[in-house]
Length: 568
Image (cartoon, rainbow, N blue to C red; front, side):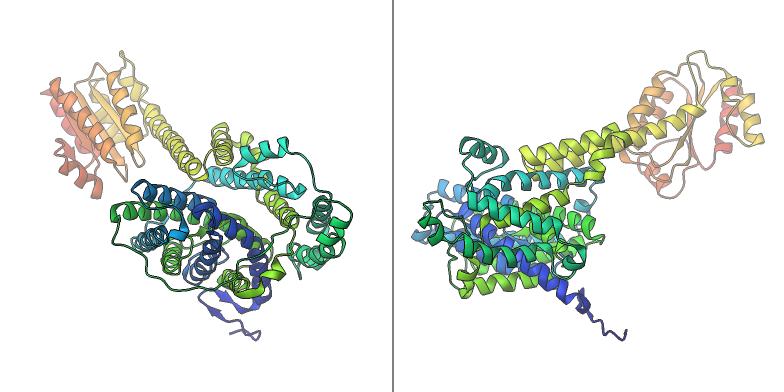
């Protein structure tokens, strides 16, 4: 151990305690109004406190057991919308929506617990790696889209104008009610000045967002207090306001009623939460230059959501904005996420009046800086020069993230990007095939003159006098190559023996195997011989399992057999 006594326990580096504490505190201040807002959006009037419960429980447990060191978890927009959908589903079967009735909350929490258990199962089954196989163009578009959303949603609060809903609705509200609050604008200008102009030698000790909180909040109380502004006849400064006080309490959800609806809702919450969290993990990796453990992250998120349901908390996921703020403020280990939850817990049990004085325009100023920081400006500027297809995917994901739905944006982006990748690989595979076989209907043996074959094999090929068709397949053949193989067979007319050389094929997909089988069967149907040469290992086993005839061990043996067939 070094003399500085660096302790490493489950990813905790004690040498970064200062950064983790500052990051956690800053993330908590930003998370506080979001947790309350998401609780109200998901559960309706009276639901704000449950959002705060969820932020405390999920944030702490996911940080402790998760696989993304600097990730901050808590209620998110997609998860809150899904919970609202759960309530709508339960209302459709006759459960009263009103929380005061006491019937719907235990059912919702049952779905939250089931969703958490599903997420743990996903992690145990090691399904996380499939989410992390996301092309950079999709991650870049998603990150930039989140940045644009932050900027759009914070313009209203920055000017002291109340907005709600998504990007379009918020911008329409801003346009139709454009009456800026002078005090809010002044607070915003001070905040932006601090977060953008603080010298690095200061921000490396006290992150500029936290510095803005410590400086601007007291100034706002002195110069823009409610009494002062009311005396001037000026509109008061929007602040976070009174925080509901209370404490966590254990409660057993109700699994006995409407179980099919609850089970389905739990599965939806699990899948959405997994995607939401692991996408945020990718964003965290990109910013912090680290690598997360997807399966462990799913287990941590699942445990957090399971316990949140047992403590009547809103379900959560990795929160992009809070995670970015945490990293930008110095957080780098799970301690930061746990500090974030502890701070929220302190607010929950009675420190609300202190946080209540924070102006919303101050938080908007901090988020404006965050939004600008997480937009992938470098890739945006040069993507079109690197690849038009890549740029189209990236911009498409960006637009879908902003104007449609962030989860669907990523799913569509991944699908399109993978299809383009398969097409590119297929073209490479088929170009290699064409280079060896420039055949037309009047092809002759001279077509093979440039094949880099050993002299003895070239001699055998020359003796065939154009009666043999040799296809040399290269690389791992996927289903994308199958169509190209079949199309090339349609161009071939004058041959007596077909030889498919797969010596350089390390992997054979099922669809490509079917294409090879079809080629062999088509040759045999026309009373022509067909040989598949050079297969070994798993490739040979797959061909034999398909029952493909004419499998020989080497290209030379196939050519020898072909010559015998032609001469017989």
